[in-house]
Length: 110
Image 1: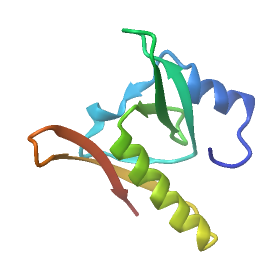
Image 2: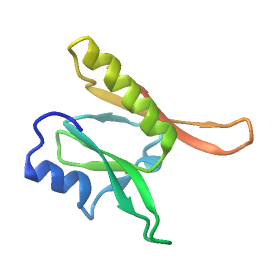
Image 3: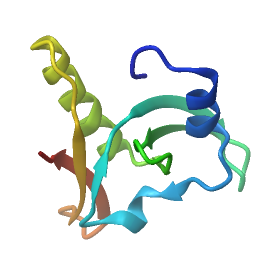
Image 4: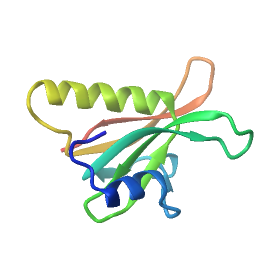
């Protein structure tokens, strides 16, 4: 997770019923005030799923269980942190795998 999360940040990132689906924001820039990765129960079958949630400076929350999005986001964060910086924003993009499956990921956004 991002550093120094408050209890309010943790609530917004993990329990906020107004959290929006990341896949619905393809093509949009999302500013990052806080983020977290956590495990949750899948509502359909009760299995565990890993969620990445991002909270904006305006208090909006976006989340995804996409492994590709999470992997690319965490790699970006790791790179920036290794240079003493943080990721200010990402753009949500989509693509199609070789097998024809649609997916989402993210790229750095100034």
